[in-house]
Length: 228
Image (cartoon, rainbow, N blue to C red; front, side):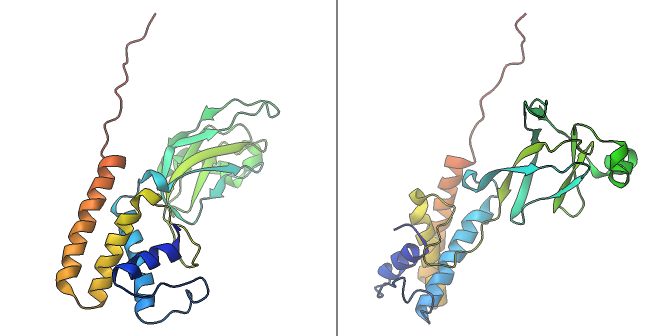
């Protein structure tokens, strides 16, 4: 099964150790704890090699509050697509789907900061989004006059696996890559430098192949000529 327990047991099988079960997974000591750590380190290496892996892409939404300018981003956000913010169309609210134009924080301070202190003087349909300095929230101009919904996209930072049934964001087709990285760390923990070095090289090559599939792609060209 493709979950934390299955990944750990896959590594244990390679080193001829007894597999774990759901019952003893959490408390398993020694080598077993090392292998569990090795699996998480392998997954972390894959995820941090590139923060734009499509399997870490998330589409999110935020219900707006009348007069509120700033809204929190999810805590596991790594990279926000500021060009993806759009006001969701809603016939009941008499609004069409519209892209929100990003502005920098300095422009917000220069031209629009009074909207945050006196929002009732500026209520309207938001047209712009700005990124705050702390990177933990975003702001809208104008303050909303209705409970609109804003959609946006981002790349997340995956959390470490903990429970035996936890499933990584990495697709199962790349289970062997997770195993390779985990084996490299497992050998390192055991002091086998030669096998660890060889396994890390295999691991790096497999990640390169993942990048070829997912990241190093050529986008379609789009013509700019207009048909009249």
